[in-house]
Amino acid sequence: MHKDRDTPTLYIWWVWERLLYGDQQAGWDVIGEEKIIRQLTRDDFLNYFHHQYVAADTAVVVAGNFDEGETVEKIKELFSGIRRDPPFRKKAEYREPRAERIALEYKKTDQTHIALGFHGYDAFHEKRYAADVLATILGGSWSARMWDRIREKLGLAYTVWTSHESYSNRGQLVTYAGVDHKNVEKTIRAALEEYKRISEERVPEAELKRVKDYIRGTTLIGLEQSNAVANFIGTEEMVTGKPVTIEEVFAKVDAITPDDISEVAKELFSRESLRLAMIGPFKDSGTFEKLLKDY
Image (cartoon, rainbow, N blue to C red; front, side):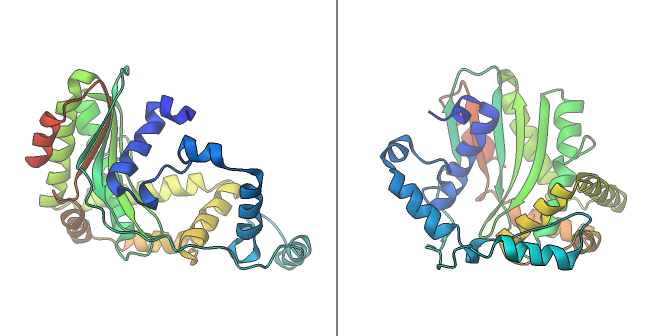
């Protein structure tokens, strides 16, 4: 068994994505099932390597203080022998699944791990950055709404945050919380109330500006290292094929208005899209079904 299954803070995301995306590529565990892994042979790995590690699927990202001309020539030299065979590529199809709304993974843990959220926007969606800002307002910092409500005011959780993740053909906005077993219902109810509040009440200009400044500041700090810059550009290249500069990202973020946040919240935070994944000592989903139904 993979070690992540024994680490609830990691395994909760396996449970969450299986719930959110169902029985398709997006919902399958990346590592694969044990019975399949045991059937793989050396030839399987070699075949995959020779067909997938080719020029068409390779991006070389360089960040730092360098001479562009010399670097390009050096890359051409170093990669002159790379295979140019067409990759064996099966289109990663995606469909909106008719999945269950709740996934309970029974485990005698010290605390219950909760992932509560919705489908989001893919990396090509025009509202992607508005969803990112929305998630930051809700749970991206120590002054965010989920943190302030669930941890500071109610004292229900030590760790709570919200994020919006975009992939090539799908997205998700989710709040995570690790809570004492007796506080699970209160935490879910509080998170749902924050989802509803931001859907119904316009975000104040001052709060939105504070969040934008936070995004700019933390992003710039995170990109102080050259490897972080390379990772930022490389990830966007692999996902969209159209990498953007950090200033282009900031321009998109700065253009977002309170009305944009309200529009995205109303669009994403629907009862039909709402999902709940949990790891903890719970077997009966009845109480949680009612919480989601009342949202």
